[in-house]
Image 1: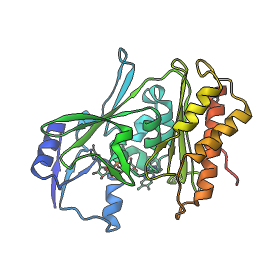
Image 2 (image 1 turned 90 degrees about the vertical axis):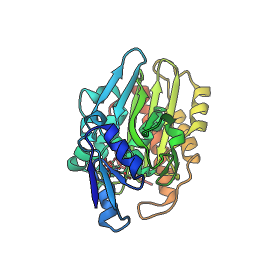
Image 3 (image 1 turned 135 degrees about the horizontal axis):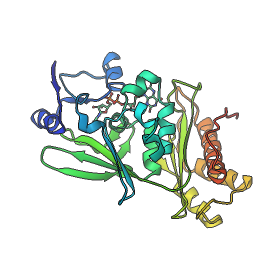
Length: 293
Ligand SMILES: Cc1cc2nc3c(=O)[nH]c(=O)nc-3n(C[C@H](O)[C@H](O)[C@H](O)COP(=O)(O)OP(=O)(O)OC[C@H]3O[C@@H](n4cnc5c(N)ncnc54)[C@H](O)[C@@H]3O)c2cc1C
């Protein structure tokens, strides 16, 4: 097997331009599982581990945005100072695998794999993130909604690298919650991210593991906006939150599989969406409890 240990983005792109069949590896926490279970074979690899540019993040105070390099590990997202700029991303990062997985795994890898259960993806969706892609000859920016096209499928071309994502800095509550078969080291059976922009007066809700890609509950978002002012702290009754959850659940298209049933997934989404909205209204910290049928 040929291995290119790139030290710059340009070096990695040059290697991909010569051999677009080469597989890119960052933390290896998805790719090496595929290899170990004989689900994929690899002839050549472009390793990004030593590319320092991919591990940087940057706040643009003028544009009110946060740009996160594709190789920044979850372990950095979950801690200050990065966690202060994107709290929902930090919350999602804290739920990923184990400390070892979080030390190696990255958003670039989560986007590269593009599983609907990937914990970073509902956050990127709720924040309307932009994915920055680069090849040797061109760069392009793709909305995260257009980037994800199916189960483990995305629009990245073989000669492209995901170099970074940009998300807005939002004033207001943002939170992430997931359910699985246990409390730790678990892939989501259902997940949700809610972002309340208290200045623009919007609530955005993204759902994970309940459709071929992460989806936005745009019907529930619009319904909520028609019911109450979302500028400043929203006034949310239990009944309003329950109806919001029910509408969100109606927008997903879950399946039965080894992790859960479609029915439980739908129920879980209604509860997660309801709780996240109540947290937005009270500004309360994470309170993840079990969800009973
Ligand atoms: C024990 C275990 C527990 C896990 N738990 C969770 C969990 O709770 N939640 C969760 O979401 N995931 C989980 N995962 C999956 C995995 O950790 C994440 O998806 C992680 O984000 C992958 O990042 P990585 O850098 O390791 O990706 P890699 O394995 O290096 O790459 C994954 C894919 O993305 C491509 N890729 C990587 N970087 C780039 C780039 N810059 N440009 C283009 N393509 C790229 C690779 O070619 C490959 O196809 C778990 C994995 C394991 C082994």
